[in-house]
Image 1 (cartoon, protein in one colour):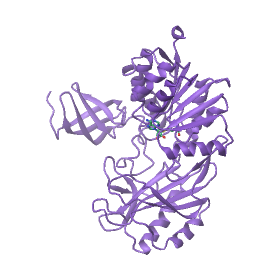
Image 2 (cartoon, protein in one colour):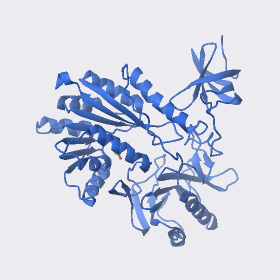
Image 3 (cartoon, helix red, strand yellow):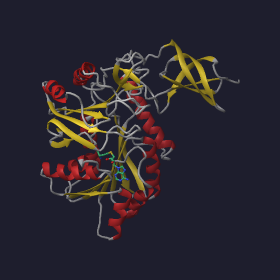
Image 4 (spheres, helix red, strand yellow):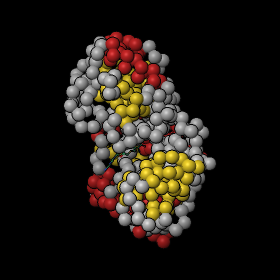
Length: 457
Ligand code: SAH
């Protein structure tokens, strides 16, 4: 049967895609339908067709799935932040576990994936320790803040995101009220005019410390002392800063940060290790799940105290410090020089001495060190961004021949591609454990233990 744009069809949703969209078939023709969940029968309008598949917009839920739940957030459907709020949490976990398994089978070429059960959260809301709110004007010229709608820069007014901490709301109310009182203009992306671009809030779950950073298209903020005085009365307020970003484009933070009140960072803990977090620092956004993820990485590293470990893509050294106490030595490599500096400082702060950090690209630093011939690794840990590891890096790892590779991944498709490469290089996957660091969204983390084949030892 031929399908065309604007045609309305009834579809039963049998599967879900990587972005959390529902997938169903009509007469063998596959349709991708955002906001439909597995088990639903829906009415949908076809928006775009390709040879044997198409995209449709959900117009009515004919029979709701038994896994469908009422989203907590009234903006869940429009907002680009959450994709899975209408799906019950146990089914979100099943969806993510399946996604990891399928990618390792289809892309990684594995026949049987040694999966452990996904590690979820008991309370899958209010877990984020960081929020970045864009500030703009609505159609009536009123100041609004909230989140971007999916794939756009249109702001959905919402000060009460259920993934963030409740303090966000109090801070937003104070800042917006101050802007209204003194007629301070939000930044207009299209024209490059106006002052206030974003509000960044960071929270230390363990210490209760709060950091507020206003991101400005300018150098100063009217009546900042008055605003700082009001904000400083909030329990836990530790740091109020301004960040200056006069560039066009959508990079949130500029290079210069000015301290207004308090100290230029907050402190938080992962287990008993403390970390200083400034506006620019990379720090995992869900600290409760991060502890479980690092504990899994430590378990998979299987350390006895005699090993030399390389922690590649190490950020501010969190995994390195976590592993250092169980290893002889840990060497970390990180591309962002400031993060590598922070890693060194964090090591000092925690009195960890058997670590060394290098700033640079992992795929350049490791081969360089290898050429000298002195470097050795018993265990290699990688925690790359979504695009996965560089081939040159994987080649070097295979050449170094560590006993074990622990792969921490935030994208199971690139993980599976890299696993395939390592399997061809004489390694085999021993265990896989997905961890849900991002409930309500379609993202997931995953820790994989990869062992050298006994024939290659
Ligand atoms: N392991 C850390 C950071 C993981 S995020 C943690 O758990 O906190 C991935 C990190 O890899 C980022 O800090 C990013 O700056 C860094 N990175 C990206 N490309 C890199 C490359 N080619 N070489 C080294 N580090 C890189």
